[in-house]
Image 1 (cartoon, rainbow, N blue to C red):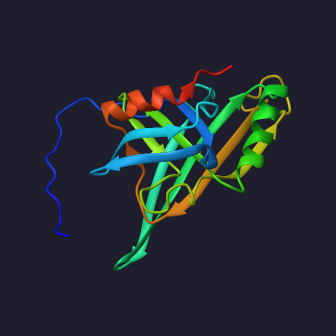
Image 2 (cartoon, rainbow, N blue to C red; image 1 turned 120 degrees about the vertical axis):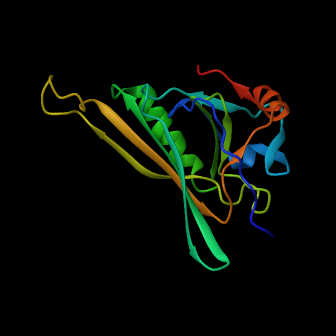
Length: 182
């Protein structure tokens, strides 16, 4: 494969992410990837991507490639913070721990309006889904502690492939496979 050309895009870039949806990898029947972009999600009608709503401006999606020669791997990471420790946060924490052994697939919407699939690739399919790696909460020591009462969650996996963007058709197909936060 030859090195690809890349033309600089002269457009506004906004950092950050605005939304995230999660599903267990086993809930997905198939995901169609064409030319490096997701075009179709297929799930049983009883299975859905569930939206979770972390604290505003706390959602980070990253991938970092490392390797030597032809052996390159990518560490995929999703970090998010939830405000006010409560039963709902505990329920989410428990569900992520329960889903981790078989893997979690995430779709994030970044602040530029682009959607990204993490925890699934066209080779490994859902066999390298995200796993709960960090789950920590703190009460804080005083009412003035801005970091008190927060829970931090990190999902991670390693694969040989990058996160995948969704095409317009992929976003429409994904919307059919997602449900709003309850």
